[in-house]
Image (cartoon, rainbow, N blue to C red; front, side, top):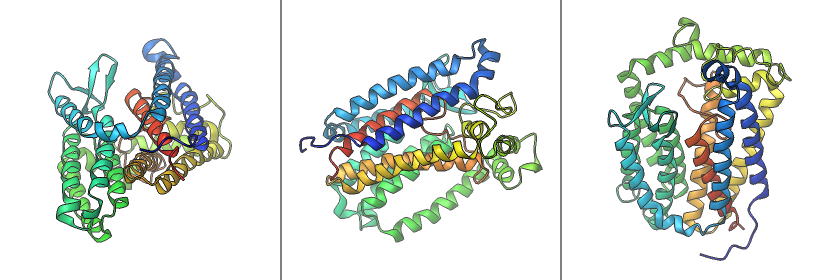
Length: 365
């Protein structure tokens, strides 16, 4: 490991803190009505989000300044721990059911989501595994099949919860790492076809997923059921127009749009801040992704390069899926908007991952 020679990427820091600040403001705006109704305190959600953000920023600056070579050594242990947590969360009476998925561990309103930890642990492990076997990636059986087996096992455990959205983000980011490591396009294309067939099977196996697909194609077939969220999201975005109704002036957060502070927070942002506000946020995400990709392409260490690509893949996949759902381009999947949506596990883990990415930026050319 060479000594740190450069300062961390200032553009990446600025984009991260800018998105985080917008997120805290929008969590308050989107959740104040529900928080007052449910808890008698309109600041309930934003106080917790601020606490999570502070912990996450501290973790970000910590991981930004440690020797990232330690992560290589810890990667196998981290993966094993996350596999154990994914098994424990499936045990009735231990795993907590929220939103129809048994995906939480904790007491009362405080908890962790093991699948969020698995996303980062999987990227760390794949970066180590593939950097040590990069010359074998042209072979399907010796190079591509072993990491796919590990990835498929993790995805299967997440689907037992079930949590298709988080599993899809992990798959998308992991496949980006595998591609960057040198896997053949024809192998990945064949896997893509198998993945489509598997997705069809998953949809057919669960009636609620089929309802989401039909609601995506035509939400007005069931406007008070499966299509309700998509319709209410568009009802929020439409009136926002160019400049929005004004911060705090959303109408859809008054018990019309479900989960306004989590999955559909971008709808509230577009309603209150309009096209200009939504575009500004997406430009900040593009800046963050661009600087992350630049780090992945210019760092000379293969482990660091693959790790940077995987972290960027998590962010990019999650943004595309969340915004795609909100504007009606994708079926509802229950994916939060990175750094913006309310949530403890996802926010602190993502800021920790961004700290690793900033650490890697110090070694880029």
